[in-house]
Amino acid sequence: MNRIPVLSALTIAGSDSGGGAGVQADLKTFAAHRVHGLSAFAALTAQNTRGVSAVHVPDTGFLRAQIDACFDDFEIGAVKLGMLATAEVIEAVADALEHYRPAHIVLDPVMVATSGARLLEPSALDALRTRLLPLASVITPNLPEAELLLGCAIADRAAMHGALDGLLALGARAVLLKGGHLPDRGDVVDLFAIPGEVREIAHPRLQLDAHGTGCTLASAVAANLCLGRTLADSCVAAADYVHDALRLGYRPGRSEVLVLDHFGAAPRA
Image 1: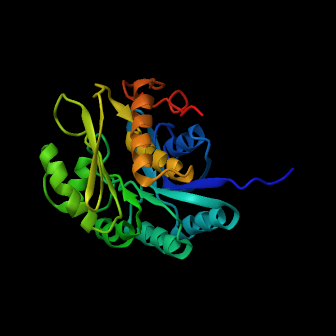
Image 2 (image 1 turned 90 degrees about the vertical axis):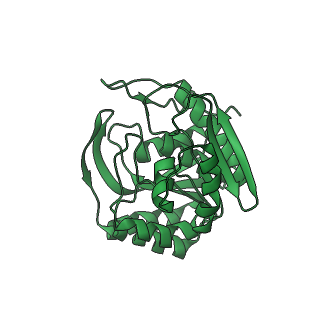
């Protein structure tokens, strides 16, 4: 059998034992886009749809070994970064990415969960700003995360537009700022920005309590980049995918929290 070159996407993130977010959601997203998925676990969590009960951060040497194993054997078209909870983990990941220089890096700066829980150690915020943001092709913060990065409130859509220049100034080549946290009843509007250009991506608001949307959005951007789409088109396609997966979602646990239907929302060839 002839070998056919296949681009892979690598997620470096935390696990979700409940299967709705983190590495598990990333791998489902890659598979739904028919992109080969690779993973390096930066954190292990004991969690379900009701919450997180325990977190274990593996040794950074083992994290680097996972990353090295992936780059040693696969053609990696994009890397998605998720939960990197400590400064030591961020430094180890940044060192690896500076060594391998993948074509695309999608950084979901996981600092604040949808529930509002703080997920990043305070000492790690500076490491994220100085080591990872300058390496990123695009960052995908939600509004609480953007507020932490900028040190100011983002209370409305005008403030979202105003925050874009500050986020780009942190070093990333592009920003996909998620607007789902705005307390309004209109459409959910995400903003894609590169220097000199802003694009609004709007979808009807779905009044649902969901899990894993941020992980899925960033991994869908990475998958679309692997498929050869431009950065702007990848972000639009990823937002469409998350909306469809949310609309088709289901509740596998005993809570009311919804998990995305990755394969129901899979792009049709």
